[in-house]
Image (cartoon, rainbow, N blue to C red; front, side, top):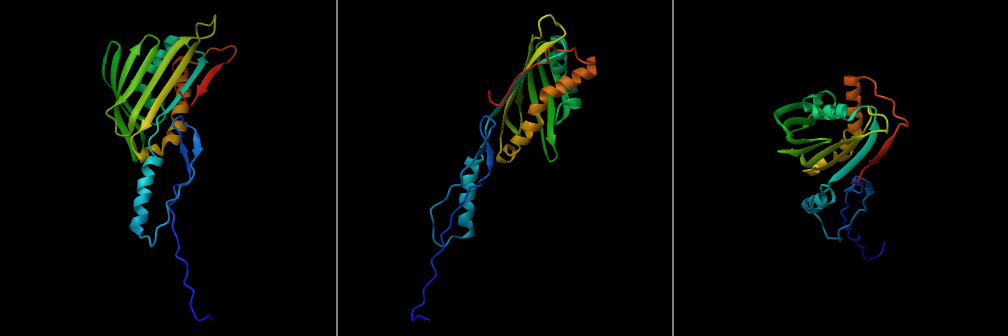
Amino acid sequence: MAGSTRRGATLGWALLGDGGRCLSSCGVLAVRTPKQCPPAPGPTLSQQARPFLHLAAPLLGNKRMEYSEARVVGYSMKQMYNVVASVESYQLFVPWCNSSRVLSHRKGLMRAELEVGFSPLVERYISEISLKPHQIRAVCSDGRMFNHLETLWQFGPGRPGQPDTCTLDFSVSFEFKSILHSRLATLFFDEVVKQMVTAFEAQAKKLFGPQAEVLPRQRLQAARCG
């Protein structure tokens, strides 16, 4: 062995982001490139924990997401309007809706208490609902899970010469308040938002029977970004 002992080189350290996928503001999955912190000698456990918490907040920050869809269905404008306006029935068919209770209702305005989610993440909030001819808008207030939640339904004529059809236009924008809840964005989007029009269409079938045939069957548009 040589007379002098070679000392091992000091091991540098790097803190990586989660390197996973995240939802962009328009709902598109994007790959995030991990970032490295400059090397520092002799890191302790607390030194590693602080940068992780510091980086996690901006990287997983809340993003507002939007979705819109329009389709021609075989029910009249009045029939679909009545289905959407029957807020007290939402608990029976709307995805993730555990309860729905109308608190007050006067001409053109409604206040309702809705409970959505699944245990242990359950949110109860007040929905301020504006009912106008051919349009219903609902805005979340007093919510703990959502920083923003707004839905808009618009009802227009369907196929020419088919009064028992209508064009159903649905749009929603939402934003979770906390990092924990924002991680549910993909699940909420796939299981609730994208299934919303289909759920109301199915409820119309229960109330009014099979829908009239739409010739040709038409789904106008569906988009994840507003």
